[in-house]
Image 1 (cartoon, rainbow, N blue to C red):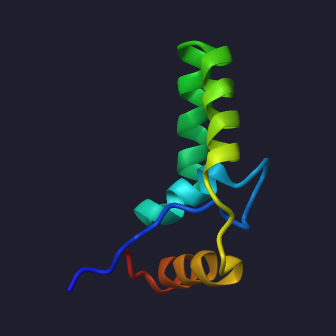
Image 2: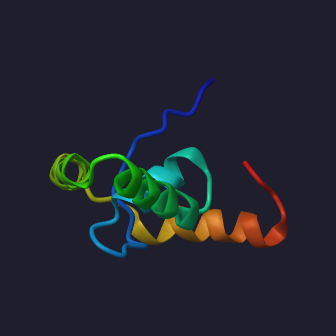
Image 3: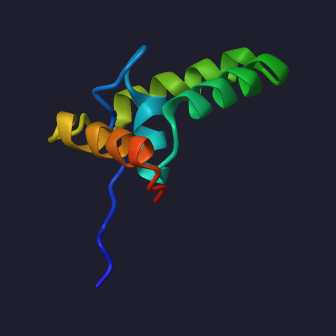
Length: 83
């Protein structure tokens, strides 16, 4: 059976945890998502990107198990096991 994945804000937050939550959802490094989002905002329109981020920060729920998701991702990355 398929394991149902849900999008949550991460406890590994720089602002509100949205980018880190998206990174955990897709199983990638949070820094990549943060840099990509910053570049998109810089080279397109910053105001709509900031508005979208604020909406996502309000709409996406906080993770009910904050220490589990990020630590599992970091452990897999350090072990060389990419999901």
